Image (tube, rainbow, N blue to C red):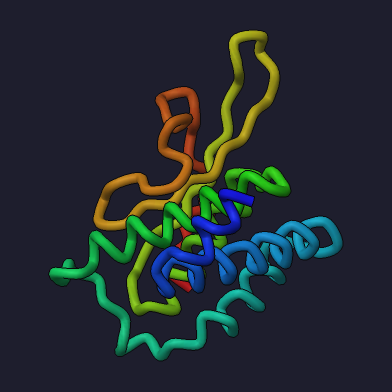
Length: 151
């Protein structure tokens, strides 16, 4: 009951972002299960629904705080139902685009210590990794054509 009470007593923006992140993650997981990544991205682009001229590439005084809130909401909502790095990166990119911020999605592939094929997705904003950063290292080669700008 304590987490629910903490959630309900939190700021409206944090609650709203968490709810949006949760539903986006559910949609993305189902979408990737039944469809393809390009199709899911097309639908997410419609959900972001901001004209390109209103997007903010550069920092504004409140930028970092909002980006941190979006990232926190996506990471918290992603704990259940254990969203993948790709789902979290897509959800964060969609929420940032809805608020007018440009970001870049990257998908990399490589091999783990046992030589097994691995893949990882991460999201960058202003040349800094904001989602999926703990696993980004030199073993991942960015796939050609997998660097997508904001929705």
